[in-house]
Image 1 (cartoon, rainbow, N blue to C red):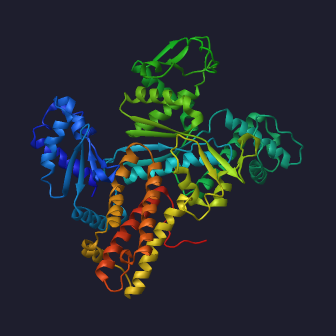
Image 2: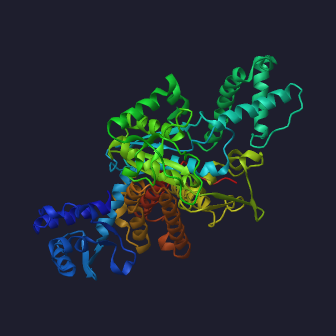
Image 3: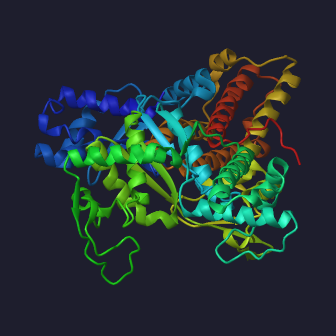
Length: 585
């Protein structure tokens, strides 16, 4: 049961009985009505903004409207008290019976509690990582990888039809440089002395690729002209780099549904790009003209000549964008258009890009492409992930991929483990820089969020094991828990139930707003509340989970523990983190 949705529906029924919901002018107001947890318990447990949302449209004072709605809410058997507060909030306090009934629903659904159909099977494409195939991933890539993967899991749990996609940037100058860098290493492996020029990739990770070439070709590649050998080296190098990237992602338990090659857009002389441009031209989005020179800044794509342009300013961009270069080849932006059209033609209704903060300049142009290609039918979101700052021994760890002196994602995961990396990448909103401290993410304390949440789940299972031993039974039964939940009633128990009841709304809100970090914060808060409740049992024997002389009360409290374990297990599963039955050093 989604408590908040349940009471939103009850309120809308009241509006119907007051002949308010029938007014056509309220059509845009109704979706803005919400019920949420009260921030202060003295005001009750739930609060709604219904009166403030509707008052202006129907021409009524919000306090007067709130009073009218409150009269009907007073008649609800699940509500103890209704309080109207300025400027028009309605605060609700619910019966203990209602909260215990909600707990029964949690126990029945198990780890499916909170699963939603709010996504209505909408087809969503989430593209994330998409790092250039020029070397292993670094920790900065890891943040976008985790954000994209958890968001995808979250959307699926909320009822969306999700495809996880990786765009392989295997066309362009960077892979040409990669091939040339590998060719240098190949010559080195054959005994030549080499010097790696500035701008090439000097990392040692290219040495195994050169050895693979020797195993396959021996020294024969040196007998070929460069225009013959580079395509061969490029193909092998990209394949080897993608193998490294997929291996690193697998260590983080990340597996994409689809890998899309940029080179596929250039097949048959760029037919996919040409078709995409022709489609836009047919609908009036393309013209031939000159771009004005940029104001106060250098712009690489600007050329003082007649060229093919996308009329992107008409769909929200800062400037019109060139689609062809002076040599007649397509710009990178033209390939972006073709790739978006490919996604659109595959039937995606929402498209999400998870990019690094250095791609902020691409946001408006991607939004313009979405509007032009889909006639604004596709909802596009771009999540820009800020930098990850690594710390070791109190000192920042600097990295630079081209210098060959970067800290790879694989090194970090190998040192601290998959779970801390995945959880901590969420423990700050993606649009803020993240400090990743090697010491803090491995310590076993409350200050380490992933440990604290996993420890709460392990503590739940420890209670189950102790109960089975004490009660001399082989297995606990959920139906027995439900039969006895009426025995609960301590305020600490009810507070925990209310916190658990927030989970379904948390899932929907985090999914619809593309904010997966909310889940990590919620799990930490839930774990903290559970640990606090457990500690009360040490101080007050009457609050202990297991009572030797009262099996009914024990089963009731085990039902609460079961609900906590289920929600933590569910949330950690979405994050992609293990929910251990017991902690290990």
